[in-house]
Structure formats: structure tokens, C-alpha cells
Length: 369
Image 1 (cartoon, rainbow, N blue to C red):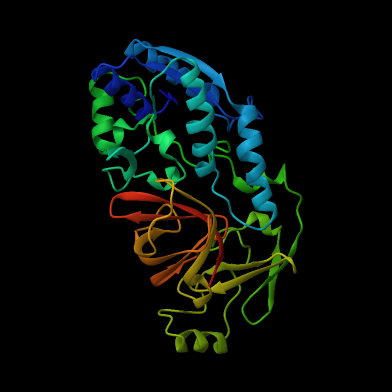
Image 2: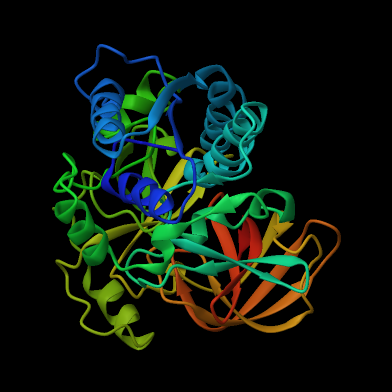
């Protein structure tokens, strides 16, 4: 059992014990560059995980996967940012660490299954394993698990995927878990709560350049394209710049509703060749809308691509499923055509496909239009 110190994995361990499993807790240490940092919660989390194991009466083992994490996840994370894209390290962490390094370790210990506190479900049908959304729509984490394969799913249990978060908290309080009220962790696994730009500064050199609007006017200076993501509106340093009459009229002509001269600015494009950050005014600007995308590095839960045709897709975690048409374009590439424009589709992020509650897999967004 991957015991993280959080309430979800703690309740998972309890549920598995109730179901008659012999449970051994494994605390995964994936990052050790900041052991003495105020932002690194690893030591606190281990104390919480050990306290949970004590209450539940299970063994706990501390395992260090920091070398594997740096090699398989963090190096790729930096490569993507340096190329001007915005990667999703949590997706890679699940595929490479939690369901590969951890799974291998558990099997060496003689385990029959692994379990985590993810809000997702596994269903076996005709000898094949399906990845399903968690029953709590506000907490479903199948998006982050879409790279899991048949071998991994066949060995995995997700007990809290059958519950709502409120029920998980209730169980934790009922059985007296010490972390019953512990708040959910946010942010990227290894960065924690620290300011993101400050963290990235240590690994990627700054290359300032111009911030331009759609007419080419220079509105300010960016700190380096790696530090910005499409759709971002905070931290641009151009809040006081107003649109001019001609731009306002053009926006209204395009049908953008409610565009005023004090509308917020959003990152719309990153031109790596010219080291230019392009921004637009107004949430509904056409530069922020995309009807199509192409994805690479595709992986499919079933081991083969689904049939081309209508499905539902997500281009970011906090997003409702959007109707789209899948076109498979080779072994690990596909394209999607959406029924309606999608906002701030971001290269480097994951495009994940669903058939109802079944997560089919996905790929990394390469281009959009």
C-alpha cells in the first residue's frame, strides 16, 4: 500500500484490512534536494504515515525512489520546459514511479497487489482491465492515470475510487485516524507549496524577451518563456496596460462579449525562435480557442488504439469532458477535432480520451489549431 501521509491512502489501507488483505505500507520518498527546506513536506508526511500505520496496526517501510524520479521524471520535466512546453509531471510520476518502480519493489517483497489512494476504479471484463473514473466527479483522478497499461492495472487496487471524499473523511474520523482533517496536498509532487518560478529558477536560466500583443506592440518584458503557460493571467506585470479603441472594436466585431479596456491579459502564444511571449486581452479571445489538436507519445490502456470516431476528451484535469472525434495517425500519434472550441489547449499537457466512464488512454499535446 502506497502510504503517503494523506487521508486518502490512510483510509485505503483501512478498507483493505477490512476486506481481509494483509497490508504493508510503503512510504515513497521521491525527492531529496530540499530535505531541510520549509517547502519540503516529506519528513512531516512520513511521520503522519507512520502514525497511521500505528493506528491501523500495519508495518510501514520507507523506500527512496529519488534517483529513479530524477532520472525518469524530473529530467523529462526540465527538457519539456526548456523547449517552451508545459509538461505534466504527475502523469509521468504515476507511470514511471508509483506504478513501475513501486510496483516492482512490491512484487520483490512478495506482494500480490499494490494499492494507492487515487480516486479511480479498475474493472475486469473478459480478461481485460479497464480504467474507470472515480465515483466522486469532483475528485476523479483517471486523467493522471491514463498511461497505465494492462499489466499495471491487473495488479492495482483503488478502494477510495468507489467513495466520495466526504465519505473518506467521515471514515477517517470514525476510526480515529490522526490525519483525518489533514488538508489535501496541492501543486506538483516535488515542488510542494513553493512559488513555482522560484523553484524553476534554480534549474533553468532566465532569457528575458518582449511581451507583445496581437498588433505586435511591446507591452513589457518576460523573464523567460519557460516560466509561463498558455492561459496564464497572473504574474505578467502588464496589468495597467489598456487596450485601445481599435482593439476594443475588433474584439467586439469578433463577438467577444464584455470586452473592456481593463479586461485582463492572458498568455496566448509562446514563440521560442523569437523568444517572444504573445498576450491577448479577454478570456474569450480567438487565440485562446482551439478546435483541433495533434498528440504524440500516445499510450492506450487496452494496449491498442480505440476505433476512430466520436469520443470525449480532456485537455486539462479540471475540465468537463468535451465531445470530439478521434483520428489515429500511426502507432503513437492521434488527432482530435472538437465539437466546440477548447480554451488554452497547451502543448506538453495531456489529451486524455474517454468512452463514458472508461478512460481509454491519451497522449502529449504536440500542436493545436
